[in-house]
Structures are given as structure tokens and as C-alpha cells.
Image (cartoon, rainbow, N blue to C red; front, side, top):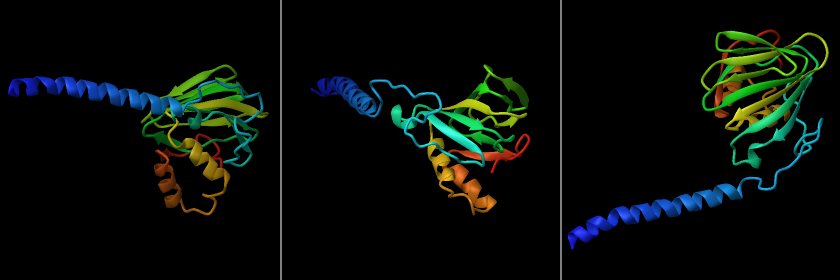
Length: 191
């Protein structure tokens, strides 16, 4: 009889695992967009254009809310030169696809000159930054995978949450959102 009980454990464990996987898949699919969608050029997915940095506009194309936080994609439009500090994401890859203008994009020790149609990939845990350079409009599609808390971070910046923060408070806010500073901006720091 003990042998029957012993042999029944693997079957019970397998059944439980199959059931929990099915429940997880059901929950996961309930939090994903299941129909697809289109976001028009120059538009934001939720009609909420973010302005986290002086002169920049972020147009959400795919939100973490659309795909169970698997990815976040937005178009960054900027007139002025500059970009963020060198920074490192703990759990996210970041990529840039230049739509218009010219950018310098640094990933690790390599700095790329990127123009319309160029794509640059930055893996997680590798310091990176970018900067719009030259005159005229710059537009770049930026993606994060997984989405993490970057969308939330940009929303907070747009609301002015960090406006009067000290450098230490800004760094704490970055860490709360899954990244940290790793050095200065490439050219002009956007504030």
C-alpha cells in the first residue's frame, strides 16, 4: 500500500502542475490585448502624450498594459539636442529605431552614429544612453522588453514629480523603476 501512495505522488504533482499552468495561462491571456490595434502616426495609444523632458514628447505605441508588461514601445520626438544620462537597466533590454534626424547612441564602450532607418540594441545590465544631435526634428522609436516600470517613470516625470528632487532622490526614483545612473550624458543632459 505504501508503494501505491508513493507512486501516486508524481501523478498528483503532474496534474497540479498542468492545472496551475492552465490557470496561469488563462490569467495571463486575460491581461493581454486579444484583438490588436492601430496607433496613427503622430498619435498616442491613450491620447496622453508625455512630456518628461524639456522639449520632448513621448507617444505611446504599445503599453505594458497591452501585453502583460512584456514590452513598452514609444516614439520620442525632440527638437533640441541632448538625451538622458548614461544608465543601466537591471532587467530590461532597450532598443532604438531612428525615424528622423541623427542620434548618437552609446551601448557599453561603443558609440554609434544612427540616422533614419538605423537600429541599435542595448542589452540589460549594459550601460547605455543616446543623444539627439544636429539641427531639425529628431524622432526615434524606443522599446523596452520587458516593459518594467519605465512607462510609469516617464508618466511621473511628465507630472513634474522629480522637478524639485535632489540628485539622491532622483537616483532612488530611478532604482524604484528598475535602473540606475552609470555616468554623464553623451552631449547635453535633458532635464
